[in-house]
Amino acid sequence: MVKAHIAPSILACDFTQLGSQCQHAHSCGADWLHLDVMDGHFVPNISLGFPVIQSLRNLIPKDQGVYFDCHMMVSNPEQWVEELGNIKVDQFTFHYESTKDPLALIKKIREHGMKVGVALKPNTPAEVVDNLGELVDMVLVMTVEPGFGGQSFMPEMMPKVKYIRDKFTSLDVQVDGGLGLKTIDAAAEAGANVIVAGTAIFNAEDQKKVIDTLKQKVNENLKKMGILTE
Image 1 (cartoon, rainbow, N blue to C red):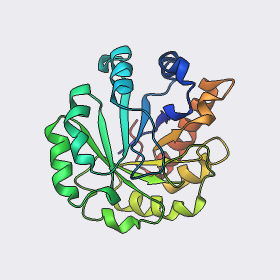
Image 2: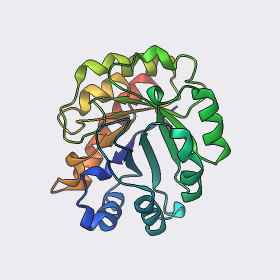
Image 3: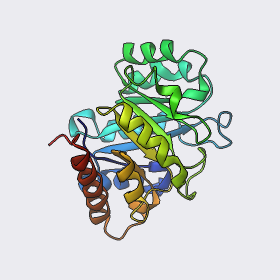
């Protein structure tokens, strides 16, 4: 059983107003924050580092109920587990393509007190999680090529989402890339319950209305599927 979670991607923030914009998104109903870490190797871009995440955690501590969802678009993710555990992020999402030993990495992440997500690039088939789905808390299906914001949503990824949802009904299934009011129906109908949205939220005149609509669309479809946690 699952429910909708809306995870604003802080890449879409005005970084001069990062803290206040994250707090505002939370006040408008977002219960997750999606933190993209890129190293310039696994993806051809560099984004925020750990001092930024630590500053956000200091500003928005765990007891405020904001789930820090850290998407690690990095080579050798193993080397960063301990540091993120010390920062007290809630979830460490690694890319399936970035590690030679996902089972050992999953074990290490749990040992450092975090939940575990595994992310799949568009060209990676859903079947790679057949043996991992029971061991992780979330599967992230990329609906754009990872590394840059503002790309167009890839509807051809929806069969992958549906495959994972049908196989793992109680797993969080996240979609990331090009999500907003025009694309939420496809993602929700495929069974995604964690929606990463950047510009659709942070550029909206009425963030609460956008977040409420995304959440409503997801929960309506989860209810139809019989897997909504009330």
